[in-house]
Every structure is written in structure tokens, then in C-alpha cells.
Amino acid sequence: MAAANIHQIKVTRGTRGGMLVPALILWAVVLIAFFVFVWVSTDISELYPNFYILPWVLLTGAIILSPSIYLWYKGRFDLFHPLVFAAWIYLFPAFVIGGIIVAFGWVEWYFLSFIEDPRYTLPLTLVYISVGFIGLTLGYFLPVGRWGADLVSPRLPVSWNWRPEQLWIGGLILLALGIGINILGFLQGVLGFQRNIDIGIFDGLLYYLVIFFTMGTIVLWISIFSVEKKTGTFYIVLAILLLFIPLRTAFMGSRAGLLIGLLPIVFGYYCSGRKLDLKTGTVFAVLGVISVIIGIAYGTSFRNLKGGEGSADAASYTEKVGATVDQLIDMDTSILAAETAQSLANRLENLTSVAVVVSNYEKLAPYEASYGLENNIINDLYTSFIPRFIWADKPPTSDARSYSDLYFSYGENSFAISPFGDLLRNFGVIGIPLGMLVLGFYLRLIYSLLIETQSPAIWKKTAYYLLLGVVSYESFYALIFPSIIRTLFVLIIGLMILRFFSSSTVNTSFPKGIASR
Image (cartoon, rainbow, N blue to C red; front, side):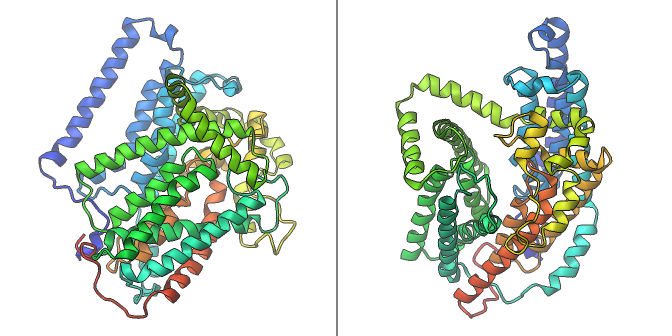
């Protein structure tokens, strides 16, 4: 029975759990009272014209954080629980912190003029996001996903209880495959901060085969933290994993690259059975903040130097990497800090992007067909079963550039739409809670099947990480389920590779600490 509680932080329902909810309520009352006092006693409405959205932001924040608070209070808090993960990895920063950024006027987007009647539309957008998250939460806690897990669980392999040291070779091969595909995609101009205007028949395949890299990384980090005896192989694998974090970040040109590199480390530590206490949590939190700051500074400078997403030859691209590092080293510290802070605010804030959709989706609906966006959720779902190298003329899936061109009059960037905005465009207001309800079913399915299991295994945790991460709360809802199908395909191939290169000896015992959680 203890194995069923794997992957959860145990919090006693004593003083800390019992005082958490009253303390949070008290702080909420204090914050609301403070904002009301500031509002009525000053001319803040003239200084900050968007200050009116703060109560709506606080309400949205309370709704987004409520599952996390509930799980903490019940002693079942899990950093990678689907609802907790969704909250801290995107929804809270993008819409709550982002809402505060808008309230204080720390961003000045050109497209703010596209939002008709902001005093009505911005609060309405927050209401739609809140309703969507409530639908997601309801879908998770309804037993539908658990029933699905009960049906699938008996059909999963029961003999793949590989010990960490059995996975070194398989994990390294997956990593090597991922690196090779990264290099090939980079040379083809489909990976990194570049893109081809013409879609190649194998571009989508290359994009998803990169999952091998993530899969190998997860397998190896879990093994690193789970292995009992540290041999020479352990230190070689550790050095390789650490080396590729900054290297891949540099060439991908991503502002979130370092944070993405940190997440598998946290997940591997967490899955190994180690306790995520206050000290360790603080270390990871500090590393996360540092990763975000460095990533924002590097990614923004790299993109500015490169000048656009046009494909570049390897030598020119590599030169830009070195030039970016030199520029950051030579830049005045105060200027770098100011530019990084503004870039961070711009990157976090996605409330106004979704508000543009809320304000204009009915008006622009007649034009969506000409941009390939009409009924994109249904269209992408049925076309996802046929690869482009078989159906060469397959219509493009939901294209962020076409969406940006239509809604933001600028097709050279990818503006956030979020599943909430995509569901609104396709099905109207009722589509938001219903679509997120279905997504909640899926999240409960993978969590019950792969984490809340009586037979925990490293391969299940790896599969869970990949199937959780494929859900993007920044992109189209239409891409979620097609991406799940493609990820499952690559995942099965990766598991066959692990099985082939792992020892054939079946171990019924788990690494120390794993079965005890």
C-alpha cells in the first residue's frame, strides 16, 4: 500500500496543516483591505488606470491555487500533481502575476488598442480563465479518469521493474538519439530559434523525435538520484547531463531553456523517494529563479542579435551564440538588469493576449477559414492520425503565425492564445469549461495510471513526465490531443529501446526509498 503513495509529500494535519487555511484567509483579507484602502484614499486610479482589475486577479489567483492548498491541507501535496503543476508552471505566473503587471502598467503592448472596452474585457477574460480552471479541476476530481486507469492498468507490463543501474546504457542511447535529431533538426532549420517557411514532409517527425532527448534525460536523472552505489558510470552520466543543460539552452535560443533543464533534475530528485524539505525546496526555488533570470537575459539578447527566425547556416548561428555571451559579459550591469526585468515582465504577462481573443473572436470568425484556423480543434484531431510524410498535402495544423497575423496584425511572432482562448474561438463560452473538463479527465488518467499505482517503476514516472509536459497552457487546445498521440508513439519506441538495452533480469524490489513513499 505504501507504493500507492509514491510521489507525494507527506504533511501531517497538525499545526502546520491546520493553520494554513486560516492564515491564507487572513492574508487574503488583509490584501483586499489594503487595496481597498489605497483605492479610496489616493488618486491611484489616475496613476494606475488598470488598477480596477486587481480584485479579479486576486479571485483568479485564489481559484488557481485552491487545489494546491487543498492537497497541502490533506497531506497529499505533490509538486508534479497535474493541477499543482499547471498552476505554478504557467497559469499563476501568466494570469495572476501577469494581471498584477497589467494593473500597474508595467507593460505597454501595441495591441492593447485591439481590446475593446478593457474595463469590461479584462475582468471577463479572468472570469473565463477561472471558469476553465474550475472545469479542469472538476474533470480531474470526477472518477472518469480513475476508471480509465483501472481499465488500462492490468494491461501494462509488470516485468519492467528495472533498477537504476540497468538503465545507464538505454538512457544514454536515448540521449544520443535525441542529440542527433536535435543536430539534424538544427541543420534543417526547424529546431532552435529558426523556422522554415515551407513545411517539409519530415519536419513534424523531427520535432517529435526530439522527445528521445527528454526521455533519456528523465530516465538518467531518476537513476542518478535512485542508484545506491556511485560508480564511475554514475559520475560520467552526471557530467554529461550537466554539460548539456547550458549547451542546449545556448543553441535553442530559448528564454526558458535553463528552467526546462532544471525541471528534470527536480523531478528525478522527487521521484527517487527523497524528501523535498524546506532546505531542499529553497535550493531548488533559488535555482529556478536564477535559471529564469539568466534564461530571459540570454534568450532576449540572442533573439535581438539574430534579428528574426529565418534559417541560418551552422557557422553563422554558432557565431551568434558566442556574440550573445560576449554582449552579456560586456553590458553595463544596471542596463542589463533593467532590460532583463522588462523582458521578464513581457514574458510573464499573457492576460492581454488572451483578452484580444475574448474581445475579437466573434468579429474575426468569418476570416478564420482563410487563415486555416476555422474549427481547428476538430480538424487537427482527425488529421493528426496521418503523418505528413504519408499525406504530403495535409493542411497545416494550428499555425501560431497565422493566428498572430489575424488577431494581432503581426505574423512574425507567436502570441499566446491558451486553451481557454482556443476553446472560446471554436465553441463559444460553453466550450471553455467543457473542453477543460475533458482535459481534466486525461490528467487524472495519467496520474492514476502512472503515479498513483501499486507497482511503481521508473518507466512509468518517465512516461508521466512526458505525457504531463505535452499539455501546453500557452498554446492551442487543438494541439494537445494530437501531441499526446504522437508523444505516445515516440514513448513506446523509447521504452522498447530501454527494454532491449536493459538487463533481462526482473527485479521485484525497488531502489531504496522508492517503495516507501
